Length: 156
Image (tube, rainbow, N blue to C red; front, side, top):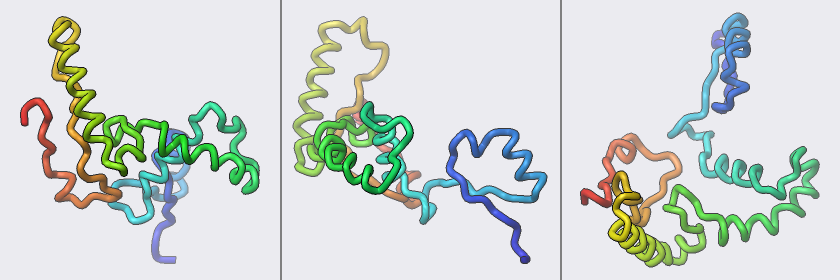
């Protein structure tokens, strides 16, 4: 074999721990971590898995079988799409985003923040939260997309 062994790992702490790193180094095994623009890395799927695992009703020992997963998923999906507010889309639900309701929700929220700051300016150390709707979401953005600066809602 003319190529070194490479372990593909996520960025979880067990796979980055010092003892494991030393063992891999001693054995001559390289590591390839998941990263943006890597064809087999899916940040949306990973975020979905994490959201599921951190729900209070998720089984402590994980889902034991495919049948158990099939029972657990049907109530999870509507909650994920219609109740869970996502940080990546300014804390609206995916359903609100897909139905175009996010613009009105974010405008109302922005007005509420501005009114609160006017009433109690001492509570605000910096600018209010950005209330501009997210216009594009990228799975694996190109370098051009990553390097394009996003305008701040306060500075325009």
